[in-house]
Image (cartoon, rainbow, N blue to C red; front, side, top):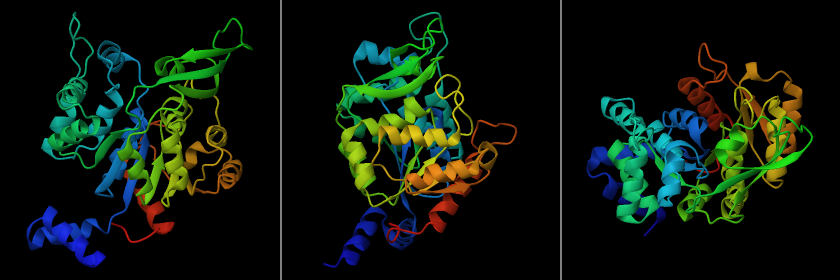
Length: 348
């Protein structure tokens, strides 16, 4: 049987009927995209990417130790579900079904008891983990319930502790370098983060996440909290190997502004330099930035060139906000990059 006839039979099995087969053919013209990150940054990227491709996978950090996620992690020994929940909400459609479920899973209880602050989606995800005993199967089932426009995977099957070397974490001793533990603490440190690592040091990657990266046409890293959401993916050896070996093109999406505490005072090019220190062999193809957030374009282009990439500037900030991405504008920027920078092979 030829490869083409096998693919056509597979499409017909998935989508019965002539009309379904045609719809399957259209899907194969779309890029297969994997987005890595966590929190609001990844949600912004997913909300944009789901508008331009139907073949989308999110690979999400699992180092969160604050809020509802931290409490569930401490009490039940599970992966922190919060960033996974946010990614699923971002993949919900714009119809009534999608928006209703997005609101439901993001809903937090308010009380004077133990339920205060817990998100419905966190409880649903953890309940399915306990019922099914399989992280990936449970997340796939939640995605099916929500009608999510893509798949959500954890980057590792074990909860991670983020640790950072921070200069000036103690304001009374601004030159001292301190080890700061926990993602929530690192994200809010008043000092300057020098580097980060995770415990355990060589965590296992989720096999489906590695496979998705290796099989992608494009891999998108960022935007998001640089040290606590973006760089942790580079600290999982199997995932880093996949990022270095994949034939996919790699685009790095920069933040619109430095994050208070974590990257206070960072220039756009410094974000790239920090990334390179944590993964010296990782090459990039494109660095996406908002022109209004780049005061020194030449320096950013030089930093991108050292990583093998070029810079694409596009208006991606939401109107009236210098720190929030607009999903439609970000989608347009990604779409232009995917079209302008060529294809590795035929879109699936």
